[in-house]
Length: 218
Image (cartoon, rainbow, N blue to C red; front, side):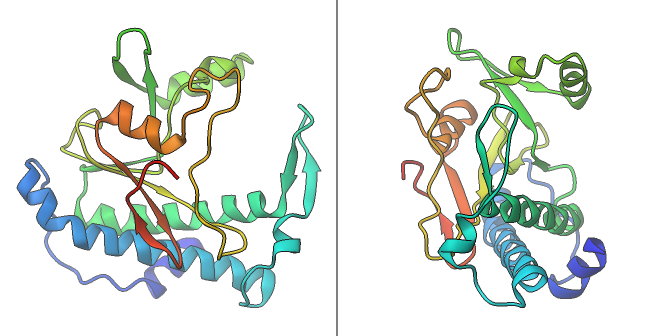
């Protein structure tokens, strides 16, 4: 269902695929790339609101509603549940349209490991993630980073730009970066700060109603 929806509602002009081997080509393509990201974010917002709310926008009391408790005792709210749905739709939309325009020059939800002592970064492949989860060693992934979209030179370790979707609930809430809690390797820092530090490019947020927000601090 999602693929058909994506193809129907996000109009992107069919053109030849681009190669982003150099910064000039990336900068020329960046407005088009960001237009796709914004259209996909808006699509995801509108579709989930249509499915669950008849097309109207979210209300604070709905967003704050507790849905369930996790095994660790933390609360899952309706805002979190809807946010996950919106991320899935936005991801499918981006994969389709950037896959047509810049195939091989973007990554979606690719995980990075960062060594605080050496400043070195590396990719964590899906097989390693699956293996750790199957063995009950998911905590070994604490400190890894997973930005929603990385535009790169063909090598995910050489990015041109980093983006994260944010779906504030209600929509007029500021789409703030999450901050790492006490006891975390990055405690006190924001998600955006760490993306910028590790990937070497300022991270931007993509949020319906807010546009592309390039500040990495709030």
